[in-house]
Length: 73
Image 1 (cartoon, rainbow, N blue to C red):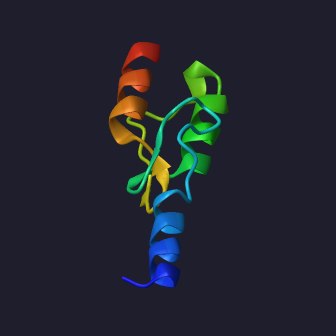
Image 2 (cartoon, rainbow, N blue to C red):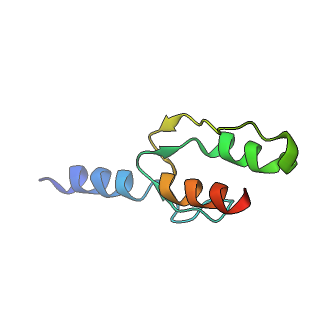
């Protein structure tokens, strides 16, 4: 592997920050961050049930979001 290719590979691995705005880990395949943040910004009575989010290349860790939504009720 050439040095240039190794550098590009590493940049792809570290492109997402370890923690998103909502405190969830950012992973390669996770829930769309904007959708999750918008959902959590709604008052609890106005949040759609069940919550549905697109899965994107760099998004919030799905199990963490699912657990947080269960805890919020």
